[in-house]
Length: 139
Image (spheres, rainbow, N blue to C red):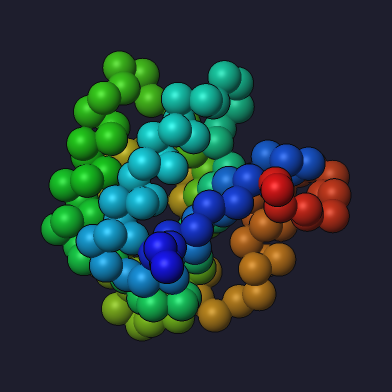
């Protein structure tokens, strides 16, 4: 059986892209990178990409490998889209690590880190200023 390490869902009615790291390992990062790059290439709006990344199931993926992989994705874009991203986590070291990660990437996108809150809190922040519709994943 081909078990997924990173799962992707696209909530069509709110246009939120959700990634869940079921396994925080290099394979999970590789799976994320493929889906992340496809999402960036398919984004046609000037609006930011709304993204929720759930790291609660298995924690933080390998730092250096993730940094190298995501830098590689961004290097393939002359003008990458802008993001508004919420990160769900439950580990206390996460915030310091992720701030360092984004500092090294040099991205100025909007991001917020959510520790041990319901997913709805992240979705509400992502959709701030919009009417929130019931969320149905793309099938």
